[in-house]
Structures are given as structure tokens and as C-alpha cells.
Length: 341
Ligand code: NAD
Ligand code: UD1
Image (tube, rainbow, N blue to C red; front, top):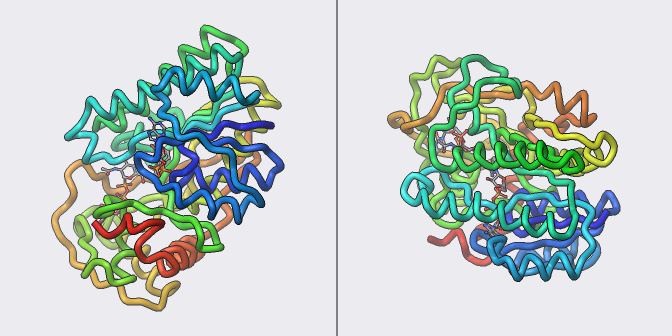
């Protein structure tokens, strides 16, 4: 298939491009580099066997998107492009709604004009908010708690309306739990830029000496060791699910929503210890007060993806830490010094 990958220069998108190329698909990247660096492109070329076709276009640029769909005859789209920082979304809700919902509208308009009707969408476990029970199934109540999460939920609903209006339009909503790790080559990985919001990149920056110590947000949760529990998933496993979702859309010709996680909860301290083992580095930490909006324990029930996609996570927490550390130690400042801020 010829696949358009929006946000393909970003963390998860880049890993997906590699898997899609390995499966024999033709990949075209569209990215405005608002949260990524063109320096990823030669690294992708080395992993994919050739420089991926790419366009520096914002999804909200109607003329640019129409031109892209005129130039290439796409069979499907994998839609990663979005802003993703929860804290920033609370400060800049208009930007998040404009970019994430406006960008998706731009993409859908271009797809409609070109008659492209298969879409894989990057959603998030954030749509479950604080779930009533774990593991979380796809039919759990949806209750978002911040503007970023709301943009994900609104896009899922928008896509549901588009599917209802056009029986030939098929969508796989993929709700990611906590993506971590990097390609085992160590040449592509997560490059957050500035102070990381998420746990694994923060641990990596402490281990490599960019930051003094990790602050653990809360040691008094009702969990095994008092720290928050999440479902960390290796980005290569996650990337593989996108290729499986495209096969599903082609085979089944219908819409579906899938959790993507391992089904196993890991505490902050367990992750720190696993990382220390994998890297041979100390990760000093202190326990501070809880981060507002955090929940004690969230992990997936991934049974639906196992059953309908034939997908399951294969890489364990040691592989996640080993590969995150390989990427960080080979690229201490990220792709182009983005970690320096
Ligand atoms: P990322 O920021 O690394 O990648 C997103 C890419 O999209 C960036 O390269 C950015 O430049 C591009 N982009 C953003 N807005 C654009 C626009 N209007 N036009 C063109 N390009 C645009 O993020 P990521 O971690 O790879 O996440 C990918 C997707 O997965 C996002 O939709 C995110 O919300 C979702 N997601 C991520 C996580 C996570 O922890 N990383 C968890 C759940 C869901
Ligand atoms: C965050 C986002 C969520 C998003 C997810 C994707 C918030 C409130 N939620 O969730 O919307 O879908 O990332 O990856 O930001 N922690 C520390 N110290 C740190 C960083 C994190 O102790 O410096 C703890 C957190 O309290 C949490 C765990 O580590 O218990 C994981 O945090 P994080 O990586 O930010 O992910 P989520 O909280 O699951």
C-alpha cells in the first residue's frame, strides 16, 4: 500500500515508518516539524533503505494538503500529527483545538476529495481519565480531564460521525497507553525538547547527566510501593500495531477502537530500578507531592487487539529500558540539540 504518515517525523511516527517499510509499504511523510527535527530523515533513510518521501506541510494548509493528495495515490493514512503535552494544553487550549481538531479536519477534507477512505488514528488512554477499574477495556467510560485529552475524544467522535455518514470510510482508533523505548539501532528515539513531561525521557536525562535527579510525583498512592502504576509499551511493539491495523481495515472493512498496552502495570520505582539495571547508571530520585490530575493505577486490557489484530506486545520492560538508554547514550542531546533547553 502507499501510506501517508502524518507526523511521521515525530517519535512514534518515525518508528511506524520503519515498520511500514519493513512490511513492504510505500511511505510518504507529512510533517510541519513543529515538534520534530528534519535530522530524523537521514536516520530513517538508513533504517528504511531509502530517503522517505516527505512534505513540510501543516495539515491545516488546504492547498498544501490537496497538492500532496494530487501528487500521490494513497491507499490509507496513519494520522499521528498532533500536539501532545497535557500541561501546555491547559495553558494554550485554543492552539490544541486548532492544531489537533483543525489539523484532522484538514486531513479529512483532503482525504474526501481524493477518495481515500482508510485511516488509522493515534488516540490515547487519556480518554479514560481516572478509570473505575483496571485493566481498562475499550468500553470503559470516557471522561477526559484536560484540553489535550478532549481533542483526542472529539477527534474520535468526529471520526465516528464520518464513518456513520460514509459506509466506505473505515477507521482504527488506537488508544496508546505509555509508549517508551526506541529503535534497537539507537538511531531514532524520543527527543522531547526542553524539560521532559513524561517519566522515561526524564529518567534518561538524569542517567546521562543532563538533570540532577528525578522527582517522583507521589509516594502515597494505594499501589504496591506507593508510586503511580502505568502500562509502559515499547514503541517498536506499538509501531507494529499500526501495520496490523492497516491490514485489519483492508481485510474487515469496518471501524474499530483498540487499546494498545502490555496489560501489565509497572510502578515508577520499578521502572527506575529496571532502568538502572539496563543502563548500569544510578538514577537518583526524591519523592515529592503528587502531580495534579494524576491517577494511581492505569493499565490496559489489550485482549481486543490480540483477538482482532493478531497483535500483542512482545518486548518487556528490560528491552524498553535498554533501548531507551541506547538511544539516549548515543544521542545525549537528541537529534539537533533539542534536549539542551
Ligand atoms: P511527536 O510530537 O513526537 O510527533 C507528532 C508530530 O506531528 C511531530 O513531528 C510534529 O511536528 C507533527 N505535527 C504536529 N502538528 C502538526 C500539523 N498541524 N501539521 C503537520 N505536522 C504536525 O508525538 P508522538 O509522541 O510521536 O505522538 C504521536 C501521536 O500519538 C500524537 O497524536 C499523540 O497525541 C499520540 N499519543 C502519544 C503518546 C505518547 O506518550 N507519546 C501517548 C498517547 C497518544
Ligand atoms: C501522561 C499524560 C497522558 C498521556 C500519557 C502518554 C498527564 C497528566 N497525562 O500520562 O495524557 O496520554 O502521558 O504518555 O500528563 N512521573 C514522575 N516524575 C516525572 C514524570 C512522571 O514521578 O518526572 C510519574 C507520574 O506521576 C506517573 C508516571 O510517572 O505516575 C508516568 O507519568 P507520565 O510518563 O507523565 O505518563 P502518564 O501520567 O501516564
